[in-house]
Length: 110
Image 1 (cartoon, one colour):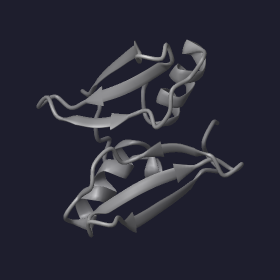
Image 2: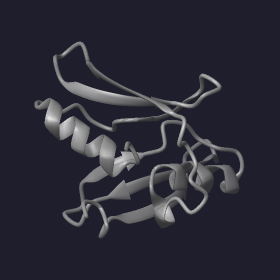
Image 3: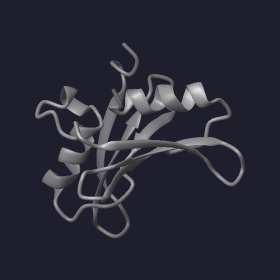
Protein backbone atom coordinates (compact mmCIF):
# COMPACT_ATOMS: atom_id res chain seq x y z
CA UNK A 1 0.00 0.00 0.00
CA UNK A 2 1.49 3.39 -0.97
CA UNK A 3 2.62 5.45 1.97
CA UNK A 4 2.55 2.73 4.61
CA UNK A 5 6.25 3.37 5.37
CA UNK A 6 5.87 7.15 5.44
CA UNK A 7 7.12 9.04 8.49
CA UNK A 8 4.88 11.65 10.13
CA UNK A 9 6.48 14.69 11.77
CA UNK A 10 4.73 17.14 14.10
CA UNK A 11 6.60 20.36 14.76
CA UNK A 12 6.25 24.01 15.75
CA UNK A 13 6.78 26.59 13.01
CA UNK A 14 8.51 29.97 13.43
CA UNK A 15 5.22 31.55 14.54
CA UNK A 16 4.84 28.96 17.32
CA UNK A 17 1.99 27.14 15.57
CA UNK A 18 1.75 23.37 15.21
CA UNK A 19 2.18 21.76 11.79
CA UNK A 20 2.67 18.29 10.34
CA UNK A 21 4.48 16.89 7.36
CA UNK A 22 4.64 13.45 5.82
CA UNK A 23 7.86 12.06 4.34
CA UNK A 24 8.18 9.14 1.95
CA UNK A 25 10.86 6.53 2.62
CA UNK A 26 13.16 8.40 0.18
CA UNK A 27 12.91 11.55 2.35
CA UNK A 28 10.67 13.54 0.00
CA UNK A 29 7.81 15.48 1.58
CA UNK A 30 4.59 13.99 0.19
CA UNK A 31 2.11 15.83 2.41
CA UNK A 32 2.06 18.78 4.79
CA UNK A 33 -0.33 20.94 6.79
CA UNK A 34 -1.47 23.91 4.73
CA UNK A 35 -1.90 26.04 7.85
CA UNK A 36 -0.59 26.27 11.38
CA UNK A 37 -2.71 25.25 14.38
CA UNK A 38 -2.68 26.91 17.78
CA UNK A 39 -3.50 23.59 19.46
CA UNK A 40 -1.49 20.44 18.90
CA UNK A 41 -4.66 18.30 19.08
CA UNK A 42 -6.18 20.19 16.11
CA UNK A 43 -2.99 19.66 14.14
CA UNK A 44 -3.02 15.95 14.95
CA UNK A 45 -6.68 15.66 13.87
CA UNK A 46 -5.81 17.25 10.51
CA UNK A 47 -2.87 14.85 10.07
CA UNK A 48 -5.17 11.92 10.86
CA UNK A 49 -7.64 13.23 8.27
CA UNK A 50 -4.77 12.77 5.79
CA UNK A 51 -4.01 9.22 6.91
CA UNK A 52 -1.86 9.40 10.03
CA UNK A 53 -2.58 6.45 12.36
CA UNK A 54 -4.89 5.10 9.64
CA UNK A 55 -7.41 7.93 10.23
CA UNK A 56 -8.96 6.14 13.23
CA UNK A 57 -12.01 8.43 13.43
CA UNK A 58 -12.82 8.42 9.70
CA UNK A 59 -12.34 12.19 9.46
CA UNK A 60 -13.05 13.90 6.15
CA UNK A 61 -15.32 11.32 4.58
CA UNK A 62 -17.48 14.14 3.11
CA UNK A 63 -14.58 16.32 1.95
CA UNK A 64 -14.55 17.61 -1.62
CA UNK A 65 -11.42 16.88 -3.70
CA UNK A 66 -10.43 19.09 -6.61
CA UNK A 67 -7.72 18.45 -9.21
CA UNK A 68 -6.50 21.47 -11.13
CA UNK A 69 -3.58 22.88 -13.13
CA UNK A 70 -1.57 25.68 -11.54
CA UNK A 71 -0.20 28.72 -13.45
CA UNK A 72 2.89 26.78 -14.50
CA UNK A 73 0.83 23.91 -15.94
CA UNK A 74 1.51 21.45 -13.11
CA UNK A 75 -1.24 19.30 -11.64
CA UNK A 76 -2.26 19.88 -8.03
CA UNK A 77 -5.04 18.87 -5.66
CA UNK A 78 -6.87 20.60 -2.84
CA UNK A 79 -9.25 19.26 -0.23
CA UNK A 80 -12.18 21.21 1.19
CA UNK A 81 -14.26 20.27 4.25
CA UNK A 82 -18.06 20.37 4.14
CA UNK A 83 -17.95 23.75 5.95
CA UNK A 84 -15.98 25.24 3.02
CA UNK A 85 -12.64 25.36 4.86
CA UNK A 86 -9.56 24.25 2.92
CA UNK A 87 -8.10 21.34 4.91
CA UNK A 88 -5.43 20.06 2.54
CA UNK A 89 -3.49 20.73 -0.63
CA UNK A 90 -0.68 19.14 -2.58
CA UNK A 91 2.73 20.24 -1.38
CA UNK A 92 4.09 20.29 -4.94
CA UNK A 93 2.94 20.34 -8.55
CA UNK A 94 3.08 17.21 -10.71
CA UNK A 95 3.87 16.96 -14.42
CA UNK A 96 1.43 14.05 -14.77
CA UNK A 97 -2.16 14.12 -13.58
CA UNK A 98 -1.88 10.46 -12.55
CA UNK A 99 1.03 11.27 -10.19
CA UNK A 100 -1.06 14.05 -8.66
CA UNK A 101 -3.98 11.66 -8.19
CA UNK A 102 -1.68 9.07 -6.60
CA UNK A 103 -0.48 11.69 -4.10
CA UNK A 104 -4.08 12.68 -3.31
CA UNK A 105 -4.91 9.02 -2.63
CA UNK A 106 -1.86 8.79 -0.37
CA UNK A 107 -3.36 11.72 1.56
CA UNK A 108 -6.82 10.22 1.99
CA UNK A 109 -8.74 10.58 -1.27
CA UNK A 110 -10.93 7.55 -1.91
